[in-house]
Image 1 (spheres, one colour):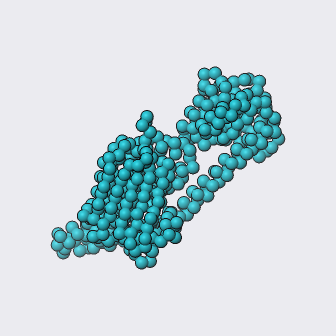
Image 2: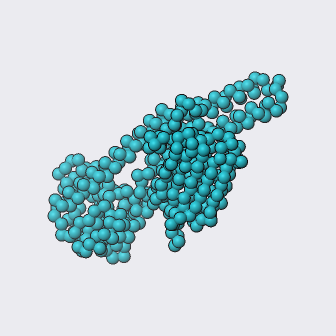
Image 3: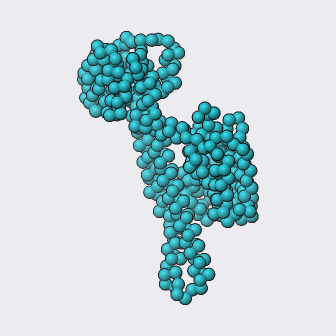
Length: 374
């Protein structure tokens, strides 16, 4: 008996009672906490209720077979990442491939030896533990980065808000209305910048924490934007207005089919690409946004005539990276492109950057079109 298994919970879904009891007995002897389910329907209920560390499931069962059990559990965030081992009396390679394509982690063919079963369980539990530890390390790094960078990033807009509001409190009775209005505009602009910073921290944290969650990814991929042309145009124009640079924006958006992305996420991508282009270029310099549909994909290309980026800086695109911070006004935490990149990736897309230092930068996002049957 292995005492280290005492905290591990395994669900066995098998309609053949004698085999189910044998497996439960073997695993209980090895120290596992074991739950039995006599059919697929009960197996789904037990998985939802008990959230086991691993599921062993027969394929050929009446009413609800193993494939249906796996499909149902992979749809739900709480059960999507549980390691899943199929049991089958069939040795057909196509049958095995079908199970793997549905998301099964492993396969055991009946009859199997006790050592084979235990080795398979050990391998899958170890892999799950490694994934869990990696996610914990990523989350810890995320928390540390936020703790280290947030005070500095928040200080600039807060300084503006506190400074101008203090002047208004002490001197408003002696100030001209126009001057009061000007200061109020500065406060409002700083508050909007502060809101954008906090929003980006929250969005980034949500994505980084959930990115290893198969259920989250599948749920995200199931959303579509039915009129992406209007969404993209409206968001780009809104950002140009916020930067008071409508005259600098050249916007060309082709007719587009539905895109495989949540509308709010599409807005976020456009917001960050346009915002980044305006931040790192000067008033009067053109920012060109071209959106096309090619080979079942949508390409969003945003080009600015600003400071550009070196190849090293492009490779370092990531959270909390602000290029040439010493030489330019602090403009934010550098999260924008990273958020756009992450959003694209979880939807099966990608972000790429082409740049010539001190000349121009083109950021390209590629997103898949929605399935016509969706």
